[in-house]
Image (cartoon, rainbow, N blue to C red; front, top):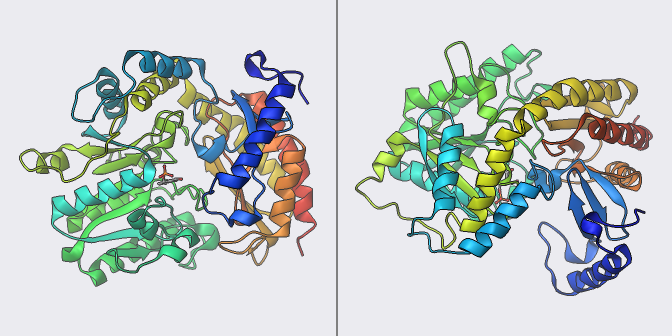
Amino acid sequence: MSASLPGGRDLDQAIAEGRRAYELDRKHVFHSWSAQAQITPMTILATEGSYVWDGDGNRLLDFSSQLVNTNVGHQHPKVVAAIAAQAHKLATVAPQYVNDARSEAARLVAERTPGDLNRVFFTNGGADAVEHAVRMARLHTGKVKVLSRYRGYHGGTDLAVNLTGDPRRFASDRGAQGVVHFNGPFLYRSVFYSTTEEQECERALDELRRVIELEGPGTIAAVILESIPGTAGIMVPPPGYLAGVRALCDEFGLVMIADEVMSGFGRSGKWFAIEHGATEAGPVVPDLITFAKGVNSGYVPLGGVAISEAIAATFADRAYPGGLTYSGHPLATAAAVATLNAMADEGIVENAARVGAEVIGPGLAEIAARHRSVGEVRGTGVFWALELVKDRATREPLAPYGGSSAALNETVAACKKAGLLPFANYNRIHVVPPCTVSDDEARAGLEILDDALSVADAYTD
Ligand SMILES: Cc1ncc(COP(=O)(O)O)c(C=O)c1O
């Protein structure tokens, strides 16, 4: 237990306040994605940099970046100061009015996005960004269907969760949103019986072509996919895949939507993960990019859609039928301006790339060699997944698809007990610290993970 909290806050008092917060939470707060009576949520008293303090005052290294959003770390002083300054200057304003925070945030996002994605429509988060991107694509093309990949996540609202290609969709699947799913590349669990990345790429593109042809290109507005699927497993696409999707969209007149809500703004070691898809022919430029999370590290809710000139032109003399009271909220966009400037000034994207290449990647490879529960390690930047398996030969997951298991729960508990807050999903543990994580912090976290994985090993065959 540490003596005091960041900012010199009295620890005993903070713990007492945290206990009251917990009691009130259990009485009155309804939690996301949870059976309300079965959870014991962790209280967080304070955060700073790569660390959080739990309700007992224990310091934990945050290898989750919360929900993979605190890309500049916790309580970044420049972002906190920008929010406070903006609150004093102009705390809120309706979306029809020009304000400097939103204009500058839009300029900075447009500057970072590839190609001619020069316009930005701001939303409150990722799911509504996806909803609006699809609406734009439908109105732009005059078509309805949207193809999205299995093993992907696009948000919790009705359309976004129907676009989602993982078990979070099942309870809300209406089968009537114009959504058609397809299989993307995932060599470790290849549905195409591939044995190499080249085969997987070629076969996944063949599959997408088949789906487009069989569904009828004249009925399809868009293809949406995460440039690197995040919560569904951090499967970095094989070289050529994203360029191949772009080519199919061009061939059949479909809008390509890259969902960068999780993968954007430094997470993958580049500003946008789509940059990893560049080939000798050049960069891959989608028509729309959805973003949220890292754009302002989640300090104030913000998302958005970066829009190509061609799609923006569709709404030049025709009203775009959509909006939000808080589109481009000044506190959120001021936080974005401070975040994006800090990222550039402090070399935060470069740090993510370097720590991934020099510390996390090699460290996880060593861990995989030591633990028979680790079936595969994959990722880039500060965006890594460990696939935990019961048996390396059969690749049977250590928790069922869409569920958890004693093996995973106990491994996560062992991490927390030793001072590491990991991100776990089904049979996977993700290593997704802030992009600002230092080499020493990354090494310290990997050491804890290394020890905790002996718990998972005990569940292997
Ligand atoms: C790729 C992707 N898209 C969309 C969303 C939804 O974002 P939000 O939770 O801000 O609505 C998420 C959230 O994790 C995401 O990872």
